Length: 175
Image 1 (spheres, rainbow, N blue to C red):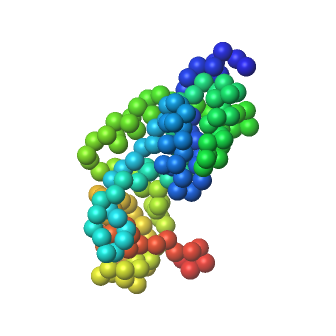
Image 2: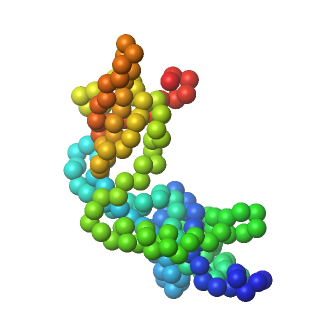
């Protein structure tokens, strides 16, 4: 091993679906430095308006390690852990400033929008709310849990702002 691999760096650890908290606790108990960025979102359950904390990157968390063989094995054999993300040459470290920025972002009370569900140009269907049944094109995120969808008719565009949870991506063969 080279000296470079024995310096402590942050790495991304892939976890089983919905096992982020289990892996976080397991690594913490093993005295391994771990960071699970969480954000506060409105519960998607229709009967509740509660705010809940969920992982910013579902299925992933950050681990600080020197990749020594013993520590690497301890990390990947943690219940719920899948693998460290990397290339064919091994795990790839995450820049320190990226992790520090994420730590600052999740410590504030301000909302953080990830924008991972929709991409500009996705064909979407509004499935509930006052615009249920409308098909259009996703344009952008607007604030917390809101999206802008445009509808083309007669060569003109009309835009509507709807809750993100009321919109679904249309399968390619329906778009």
